[in-house]
Image (tube, rainbow, N blue to C red; front, top):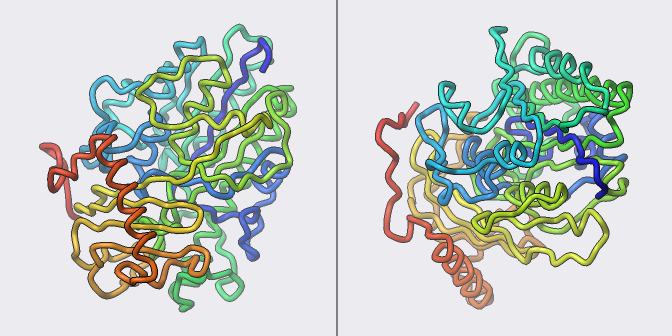
Length: 419
């Protein structure tokens, strides 16, 4: 990778899933992010460890599953990382990086942000504080102070509130509801079309400000050795997506570009997990990867070296607004979900409930049923596949010390549940 360490700029959005033009939405034009994908690399099968905000971001920051790092619910409701958890910011600071937080984070309560390891926390009183148009100017101001000759590279985590419902901030310009593409797992109704059109408006705003960032990086001569990473925490805020362990809840955007580090213009289909990002960064900058990190570096894939891809990813759900316990294993061919509470599905963000109680087990053949509509659990012809996946899932739960094996996972004292 050379002697000069790269600057690392991560841009993370809320609830975006893979809702971008470069990921195949035919009705959505995201010119700047699509260009970033063309110049860099895009990951087709990148999955979150969980379909909820804080726990997923906790996995990105620690390289560990929610039930091992402790962040099993929303930080603003009182859930927290375990004492002593080491974050991406801690690791990079130890390697000599300036560590900066711009805008939104969702891994700690406001008074406790310092423990995430950032040296510089750029918090302003502007309202709403975490919109692109508020956050990005402070990042641009910072980038304008750099000339590429600094003795310390920077790590800048940049978080936006955009793409989180209700998509009705002033300045959002919805697309035409008649023209938006409705994914096949959603009902094609006027309500869903209106929600999707507004959602597109928030995505356009993100794309615009990402373009501003990329332009300034080039103007400042920082583009070649700045590792730009664009991602999100989990799937879109619609039925059968956010809050579920179906693919629309777990599949997330991951686009990155680092001209000095790896060749661009590629799309990877290997299965990756969002806890793989931290060890990949650590390996790339020559930092040690602690044994307790559960992610797997994919640097070899980026560099074109032999790479042993994951055979499966694991996912979990614990708490969101209420207790919502699920575990899953996903391979290239199958998805197996164990539901530990058999109540009806939670009312989804778009306000359209899917009726019926959950089965204790769900099995989907992703080859013939990519939208996960036909539950094959219990069917004789799939008995061997179900048995194998259930065994592998249980083995992972045991190896990672999953507390749900001992019964319902209690919320910590003081946590706020319910609406």
